Length: 562
Image 1 (cartoon, rainbow, N blue to C red):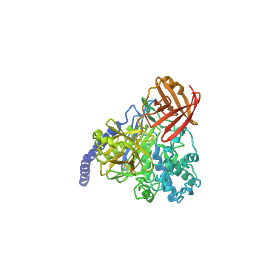
Image 2: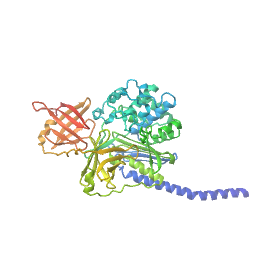
Image 3: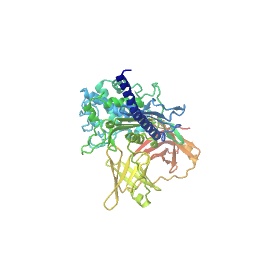
């Protein structure tokens, strides 16, 4: 062997010897990270329950990818990471990028009034722009907040019919003055995409995003189409998990109808942040929180929430739709992307807190934990009351034993956990509450905020809290009179049945709930703030019912007796 060859070989050996410990340490660190991520996810998503798929990437490389829990409870099929889930509102970023692609081509402008594309839309004398729709600042009523929408879940809608649901509703505020999450705005964006491109929303997203990027497992949701590895969704019913209620996927449309996998979302994220779809100047606008007229940040860009995690910029969004919850989070300055898709909608299994925890693990930053404290009754009692925001929406703060609860009118009740006499956090999500006091120490209002978006300010009123509903004893034989089907809308029926000494209600595609008597004809629900009155004719025959929820009185005619 020549002398110089010997030295080359020796140098190579020495180089490998020095690299080996570094590689070993790197591998050990990666394995340790994987164990920590696994511990976070497996604690929530158990093997015999609906579960989740997760992907974590660092600098474009997958460092964690796994499935947890069950894809199908009836067939006993476990979740694999390549399975297809509904995305819910993560759809909005695809809609936003579609708009930016058209803007980049000069086919529309963000400051264009929406009537340029939808000339028949009644803007009620306001100037509503494309940007207002993108940023949830239009002031248009969100159709998913309308109680009359709930009975329509099973109905297939055309885009025009969907817009007709909300177009004549009063404006909630002047465009640009406030921020309020709004699914109607993204329905209108879908209609604009169709008008400008000459393609359906489904065709545009598939032809301009999914196919070019190789997102082979991403689709516009369609319950008739056979889609490989698509899984069902679940929610909690009485006594355990039940199938999620049916929802026509024509309704979420450009606000929430897409389905995909964690792998495809990783492809999507790389394409977006690399500028493959739209140039940097457009991305900068999408990733900048819109400023309201008063100068306050909305915390929302175009289809993404803009926030930070302990000083690290985050671009993120969640999704919730019948039977599915999702969360996606990017920390672009740190080269981090992660997505968690789940096939259940249960507050305690919300993927957002898990995503935030995982981001902290990758960054090596301990997650700040709220430290619960116990408060005496004298500290809690002054906080209870009726609070109202500038839209006249009420929030009830109530005490039950030593626990405080928050409940918006017509909605479910959520437990608040105290960190101090005035600071609380929601038990099952990352939202927080701070009670406001005047100089004399009297409670005057409260502030509710999440990790992103503007805070909601409520003023404490002198209105008394709604009296706790008192269950009375009623002869169960009376329940037989009420049994039957009641039609709220074509295709949406409330079935009332007696089960022993209980009266049960089940709306089309929804789980059973028990009705509790306040009188022989008036009943209430405990799972949400809703009441039911049974209606009789002059002869005493039950002819219908009226559902009271969210300030709405919804009559239903009895169509069938048992």
